[in-house]
Length: 277
Image (tube, one colour):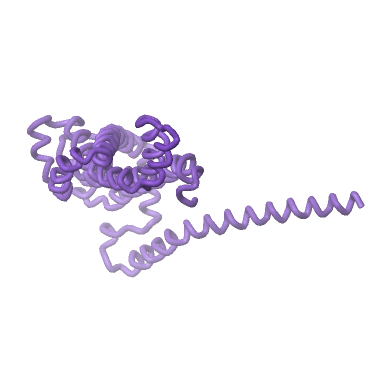
């Protein structure tokens, strides 16, 4: 009897383990499949000769260039400089965006004062501000960081403001009826309720930061950066180097999403039951 129970328990563990591995394989396949499709289409166009080979290289050439530039330290150095500017500007955007968004959401007077200004300035393309920032701050990293911070803060402002306004009134009244002061109300009700919107705003702000920074690195007189690499490779028709730089941007974006934003989301709003995983 005991042997039979042990056999059943072992079989159950094995079935559970097999199920976990099947789910992981299915998840990996679902994530990898779109890249396989795009790669197959790319290879078909490259082999068909629709574009000159120098302008539309095969994927193995791009992969070889990626490996070569990585081993030579060129891609890591460019990526490190870009990430330094990106994170510096994104910190500025996060602080400004979350602070202004919360202020607008909690104060009607601040909303009436700041919302028209933000609504007018936000739709203007970030590159339109570049000449002003170059005149104000000169060449180098400072105008890049400041412009990234300003441009990326607008999605954070709008989403934070929306999140604060979207907090259910019954939550606020329930907390107040239980004696919560303004500090506890903000910490335990307003901020958790607005956090899904804030995380969405930060994701959108990071995307805006990438767009403006890659274009800006050719204008501010820096010698290192993924944007500088991509535009420099374009001048020499090194399409494989351009695509390698673009691939690095995509890889960094995936890493930030999976290891930063998704982790924060899982430890906060998913754990609290406010959104599903």
